Image (cartoon, rainbow, N blue to C red; front, side, top):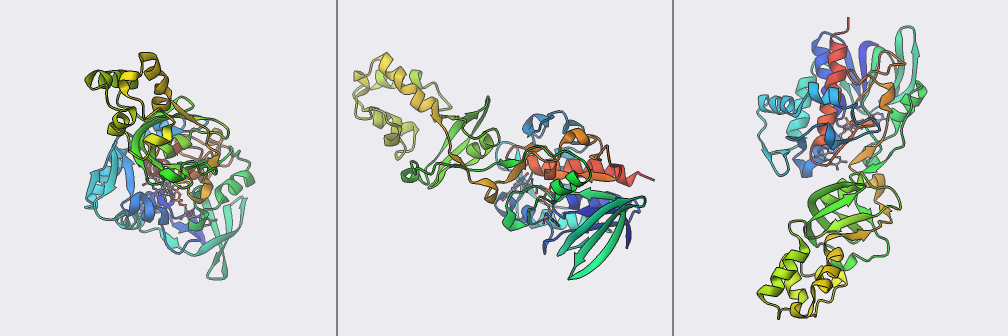
Length: 392
Ligand code: FDA
């Protein structure tokens, strides 16, 4: 079988790339080893898919080259995707911080992508057995229903994602293909992932959640913090996890909306007979207060300015060194990946291997939590698809 473009991976990026190329009259085949396309889309955003973010721009992405993502994000923006969603009659809402979700179901996004990809062919439950490159392009041997099928393709788009959640079919195939064709792969590690503290120090607090500011490596996020049996989770934790490296500390501000010293002094002036623990309980979850190691039985009036100031680090600059993360088992994304130095930022094509493209999470571009990663999948897919659709 001969096609113009073979796309490996029927996830967010692969499905989205297929349509424009196929509509330009090229024969496009999308293959995936999973039984259903877009499985991560289906489970994303608690089943409602946080499909983009109103504030998506290059500053929300991590990469060894922070400039690489600019071109693709500028040429296919969140507004373009919102427009597409609207044209398919999918109702959506902003939840918080610019995060857009389907009103009904993430399946609507998968259905939209399936409709948009027509007339490309989609082969599911199909594995790649062998891949080579010759004068006629790429030669792939696919394993489809136990039968070997030889496919030649002028162009190959690798959209097989990262290593996150192997149970859902994630593999390192994109990195293997990159290495096979001489492209570099930067170190990969789990991102948007909970922290673990195996000493069990947070077990008594499991289930406690509060708004907090978490900082790591000079970057801060104001979102919810959740204590769990295993350690720390919640959006603020997932966000800073992408900036964390083993052995480093994170800083937790439990009172991000106020200056703790000014607040405690004002409370002391208003009613100094109250105990510190009672006052802290007005601003923090009651179960958390005794855990902070503060003199909660002391009356505010008995605490000098100096004594109050000494309490502030525990409230606004609590330093913790996570033992580790939950790893790829639960990580929403993979940091690192195909080194962007080997790719064109305009087309996602490998400069050393014309006709070979890498898009989506496989590339060393990783977004914050909140719809940014799907936006990268759409934008990078669009960059490759535009180049392929207009190629003679
Ligand atoms: P994606 O992972 O979507 O697709 C890769 C495809 O390749 C899969 O279909 C897989 O089966 C296939 N494949 C892999 N190896 C293969 C092989 N060897 N042979 C054949 N096929 C192979 N992002 C966001 O912006 N908003 C959100 O709400 C969420 N929510 C979310 C929840 C959860 C639980 C996770 C794990 C992740 C998210 N994300 C997210 C991240 C988002 O899902 C992710 O960034 C995109 O799906 C990446 O799109 P890709 O197409 O690059 O990979």
